[in-house]
Image (cartoon, rainbow, N blue to C red; front, side, top):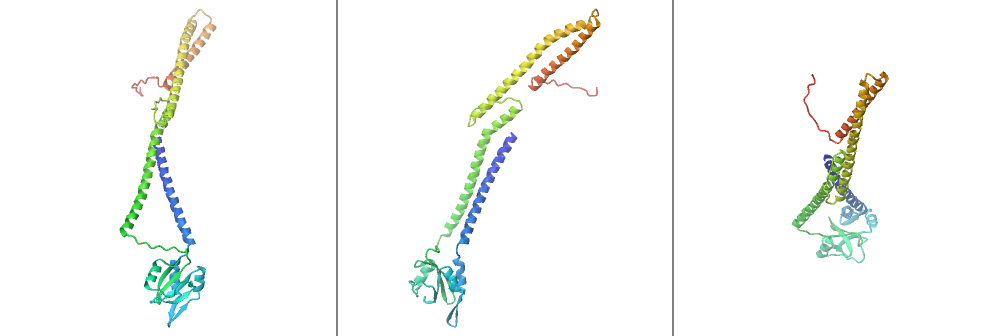
Length: 307
């Protein structure tokens, strides 16, 4: 029975390892997906600071680095610099349909959303506001404003749902393993008992009733064969013992008859010795059969080894 429990314990532990491997593989795949997406995506939120540093105002004149135009061209982007009044002080590749002056409302709108169809990013500049625009549908902008309690409850709830799902899966795995162990355990124990030469009687009910019935039938057939064998050996021993006793009796009389020739008496002596040998062999066979099938009673006695 310990072997059966050890087997199903290993089965349950292997199921947990499979679940952990499943979660690990999914975590690696998700991390790989984010890595590939990040490596293939542009990083406008990192480049705007660099672009803003390429534009400076010296003695009332705007100085632009030579790297500005090629860098904007590689991303098919445009840029402009607005003063405090919303007027365009400088621009590079500015689309023709966009105005050259903006009021506070317009600036507030495109800072959070879009300027026309162009997604734009803004950056504070010593001369005013630095704006970088990208082609339509190249960058997606979202502005989320959520309640803090809502975010906290959502994150905690998501984590709790994940943990509950994992625990539920483990509970279902354990329940399923316990059911299998409850159904298969008696079968394995019965097979082990049969291997030890003992009788079994399994309950013929449940999902594996057919297997239990088959084992009971097999055990019954083995018991009948063993019983028939024991009875046959016992019968043979009894049938041999009677004629053997008669044969030894007559041989003993011949051996003890002084009137008979010496050769005849010697032959009778040989018959007696071989007959006794045969009697011992039959007795040993009968005893071995009884011991094999636990038919010989145990008689315990105290002895003195020294004596």
